[in-house]
Image: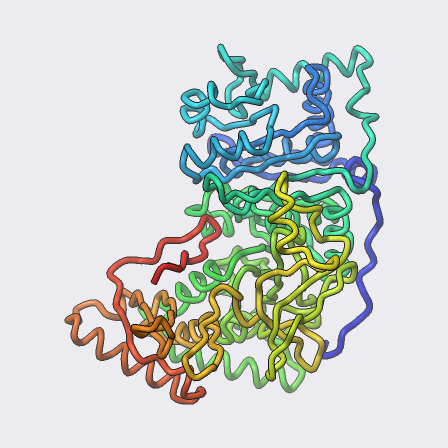
Length: 560
C-alpha cells in the first residue's frame, strides 16, 4: 500500500495477568515458547507458561517477596521469560541486568536498584557467590539452572515445586494480587558504571500501552525468533510481550553465534534486530554470490523481478527461494531499531520479498516512539508516531531539524532515585530524547543523529556524523566507520575525519599505502555529490573492529 490504512484491531487488556489469562482461554494448547534443552527442541504451551508463572509467583509470595524489586542477570533463556512474566503479573518490579557488565558494574546495579531477590544463571554463579556479601539488600538468591537448592541459594525448579504445593493448599495471594496503572514494573539501567547508572522507571501503563498501541501500528505473525538480549527493552517489551498477546510462538535464540543456525531450525516468519545484524546478513548474501561467481546474475535477477512487480507480477518467492532458505524459508518481516538503515539494505530485502521496517525508540519511552507499518513502510524513515504518544520537533533549524521530544502514555515515570537527572530531560511534561530529526512530507519521522554527536564546524554548519557514516557504509571496502570533527588549536572544529575499519576480505593482499589510497578514492567518490562542508578531509585506518555495546552499537570516543 502507498497510503496509510486504519489501525490494526487489538484486544485491550488492563494488566499482564489479564493478558495471559486471555491467551490461555484463546490459545491454551498453542506453543508460547520454543527452546533447546541439551540439543532437544522443547515447547511450552500458553497453559503451561501460565501454570509455571503462577507457581513461581506463589512461591515468592509465600516467602514474603511480593511488592519488591527482582533483579535478574542471565543469558537469554526460556526461564528468563518465565521469571519476567511472573514479576509482571505480580506486584513487584523487574530489574534486568546486562550479563556482559563487569563485576563491579553488575554489583553496583544490584545495590542501587534496591533489589531484594536476585535470579542468576550458572554462567553468573561465580560472580554472585563472590559478591553476594556486598549485595546489601538481597535476601533471596535464585539459581535458574540448578535442580537442587544450594547452600546459599534456592533452585528455580524447587521454588516452582514449592509454589505448586502452596497453590494446592489454597494460597491464592499471588493470583489475586492487584496492580494499578502507574505502579512501577521495571527499572532498566542505561549504564552500569558507578555514579553514572540511570534507572529508567517504567510503569504498568507504559508497558501495556506499548503492547496495545504498538500492535495497532505493526503486527507480528505466528513464529518469531527472539534474538536480542532480554535486558534491552526493545526485545523484552517490543518483541516478547506483543508476541504473547498475539499468541505467537517465541523461539529462544540462546546466543548471538546461533542466529543463522536457529533461523534455519525454527523457520520464523518475523524477527526483531538491530541494523548491524541486517548488515551482516546483507554482506553474507553478496559475498556468497561473489564467491560462486553469481553476483552479476543476482543483480540482473533483482532488476527483472522489480520490473515484473511494476507490471503487477510478484515472483519473489520463487525467484529468490534459495536466498530466503538461508533465513529459514518463511521470513516475512525484519523490524529494526537503534540506528538508521542504509538505503541499499532496504532495497535489497524488499527485492527478495522480506519486509525490512525501521522503527525508533529510546528506553525512557518504553521504548518505541515511531515505527513503519506492514503495508505502509519507508525504510528511509522510522515511520509514524505510536498513537498514544505525541512526538514533536523542538527548536527546529532552517532545515526543520531539531530535538525529538515526546509526551504520552509510554514516557517513563522518571529515573529511579534521581530527581535531578529526571528534571534534566523532562521539561513541561515533554521528554527530551537527545536525538535530532524532522518530519517528512508524509508525516513520518526521520532521525538525523544524536545531539551529543553533533559536529558544529567553524563556519557554523551543523554536521550529523551518523548521516555521513551511512553514506560511507555503501562502500564495499568499508566494514565500519565513525566520523569525528577535527579540532584546531582553539578547539574549534574545522574539518571531518573518518576513522575506518576496512573490509578485510576486500583489502586482503594490499599494502597499507594501497588500502589508504583505495579508501581515500572511495570516500571522495561517495561524498562528492554531497555538500562541500560534509566532505571528509582526513581518514584514519583501524586494524581491528570498534568496541561495541551489547546491542552492537559502536562506542564513540567523546574525548577525541
